Image (cartoon, each protein chain N blue to C red):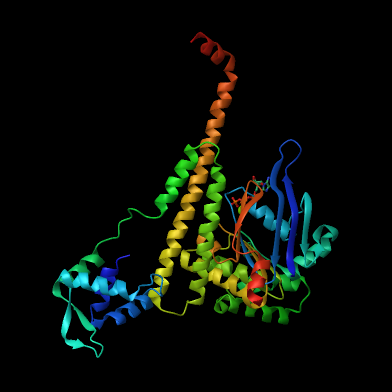
Length: 196
Length: 239
Ligand SMILES: Nc1ncnc2c1ncn2[C@@H]1O[C@H](COP(=O)(O)OP(=O)(O)OP(=O)(O)O)[C@@H](O)[C@H]1O
Ligand SMILES: [Mg+2]
């Protein structure tokens, strides 16, 4: 999650204070990605260093906190962010893929059980997200979009797990038939083995 | 706690001695008032068989199906049929609407079969159609409706009157994702607001996620579930 671009997006219309940005960021995502104020100020400092925002001359509030505004370079960066699709490299799913690959590679692991446990657990988070969606159905559309995004990726994971299971049972069946046909030829195989 | 539907050690063997298919093997499933349970599993895993046994449309080879505490096996055919009309709503995989009847007549049917007076039956049927948000289609014939609208009529027929159990076999099969969600919202509301016990068969994880519990069938065996057990749920609510 890019905090940097999130803050730029919130600054697009008017200058804002750090604490304001934090509040609005959390409101937009309904605290799905809680930010602490330290993260906000560290990010603002970096953005300022890179010339994407500047502390506005006009506004320091009574406590001496700066008002930040977006620069032209910041606007260009923000436009680029919205235009660029998010790539799917290093996602948590990868850990799952690796876990399954290893479950298959290492003897004595019940892969179906691993798949079923994962499916049940992912479904549980999907149930929770759906419950939130139901409660919040008249709420902020931005929050509902975030929820849907999480529901869709959970769904994709479950479909992938179903697919893995189907592939696996097909694979096992064909493995069984090939050993079965080997069994039929066993006397010959045996002879061939003895000759070697 | 009150289990409206209680399935115990249910097995169903299809076919004759030559070619036996064990569609269900020792399935236990209890559904409480207000609870929605989703059944998922690959094609042929026994989902429809489970539902038809639960609804008294098919007889178990062994095990029990209790509806409001009554074992269906101890009732005669007539009593089972009456229970089905009064207590159990069933949404079929292919809707099963009667083409020669209008929407409202289709919905009235279970009530009329149960000897409710036509005027009263019509009133209830219109209320059910309103509840599934298609009151304006009351006098339309099924052939002149979209798939989603037919699906709603089928659901209205399943909820009309004082049904305690709603069994739905892929009720979102032919629908786009948005219409499917609306159907789930509807089933959910029936359970939440009317204390109906619902069982939903679906291939769609998004739709299953609306349920309180999701159970998984593989080759006729329940292999797991997601979501709290109903007992746990009750404990949380009374805290
Ligand atoms: N009347 C029948 N006679 C013989 N076998 C049957 C009969 N009905 C179902 N079966 C078999 O029982 C098994 C379970 O069928 P069932 O219809 O319950 O599966 P399902 O999970 O609903 O599948 P789908 O997702 O395709 O609807 C299958 O192997 C099926 O071929
Ligand atoms: Mg089926």
